[in-house]
Length: 277
Ligand SMILES: [Zn+2]
Image (cartoon, rainbow, N blue to C red; front, top):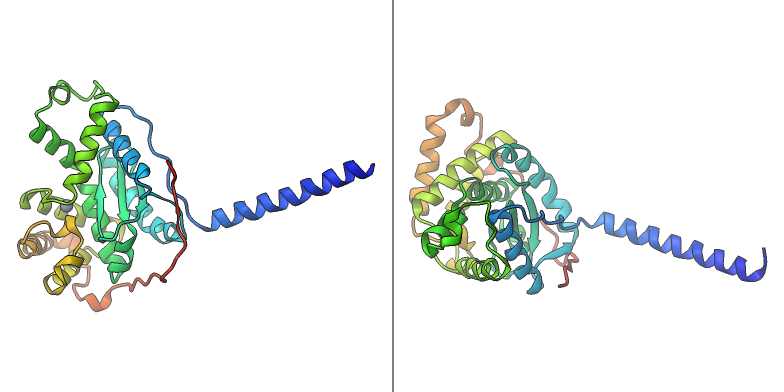
């Protein structure tokens, strides 16, 4: 082998090593899922919201936080997936306000600050179960249909909205996250279905009740919006606890004492890499 070829192969070996170590470090930090291709109005709106969040550089592309989220998201997806036609995908996003929200098409967005806000796995699981239930109930798309009375939406799910209209609705949907989103009844329905999913996935469904209890004492500015969008957390707690009493075969085995919770502690300053437009 002449010197140039030797040098080239040595350079290649270094490049391979670098590539391998980069792959190892990326594999170590969990990554955002790949969004679903557009197939109908729900996936179309889901994609439009995704693109808005990506353009605002809010979506976290990779972070060890995904490794923490993944086992919980996977367990919930296994139970929730048969109830919805598109795959659930969980994305981490960065916002100051602790929050979680679901969009049509199966995407669930978990704000990184929520991971620091919740005190235990059950509270986080309860929040995620609540969000996937909104998707299963088609709450977002039903609200859009109701509010916008858009002819295109009335025609049916086979007709796509087109990028301009989908984008306009997506911008409004993201704006709605900052206002009162759903009625108390719709929220309670998502709580109840969410508690069924949590129980089936093996997470103590009392987590959501514990979270509501904490809200009653917390600084209102710190309360995750979609869980606190009505001054009716008391009613929602009562509805959930009634549901638990009505279905002892499912719920009586779970401990109502928050002391039984699985503590969740997330180290500060975990590195995140943002998805770039
Ligand atoms: Zn909700």
